[in-house]
Length: 275
Image 1 (cartoon, rainbow, N blue to C red):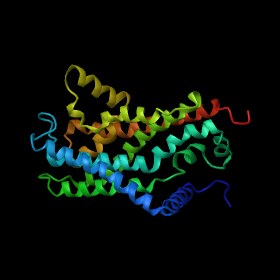
Image 2 (tube, rainbow, N blue to C red; image 1 turned 90 degrees about the horizontal axis):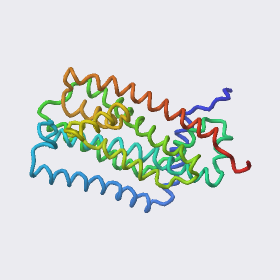
Image 3 (cartoon, one colour; image 1 turned 180 degrees about the vertical axis):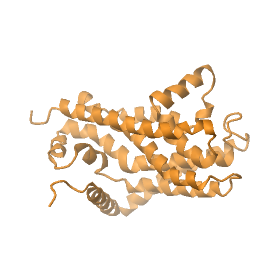
Image 4 (spheres, one colour; image 1 turned 60 degrees about the vertical axis):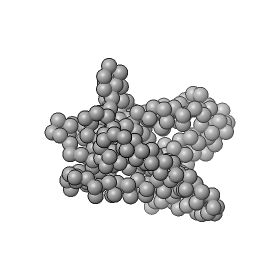
């Protein structure tokens, strides 16, 4: 038998164990699902209200009602995947360091980053994924110019790229807990910095907006996380914009590589509970 574990089987085991744990308290699971979905419903109602007074989000951006709803649906899908698989685990990392339980994770015959990142699955957050998928399908049926088959097929890939970029930001912030021991503001900082990704990049204009667009596209590519997959579905990319799809692959690879280096470096700096 191979000494290396099957990471897919381990992930499925994590998912199954998490589901069993959630189903042990069905009432709490139902309330969490409803609370998560209510947040997305309130967001949708807010933008429905906005479109009662304007035709586009930003002048001449092309983000009218249904294209923007596709953008909003993509935001829901990416954020739901982050809330389901990544954020609860990353937020627990500092507690593992403070209590010394990271020792046990490092002793397991499996990659420590994989174990820490995915050992817990928050199934209740998938309600937002289902709501976002429904909003996406509904909005697509109302587009005057539906996306091509190639764009639809590329969409899941670029959603995963968006998750990869945001995961890199989150795990890098979590790794900083090795130096700070307690990093309770990590979630707040992640929310603040990723707020920029929740809006179309076309709205970043003028003397302040243009530098922000460049910064959060090429240096800290969080605008890529939502904008590229949403643009693939919401409106045809012009020939001059296809470079974004290539850059998104490069940015995802670079972000994952940097986060891996930071995480490995943080483990080398870690002083176990027994030291």
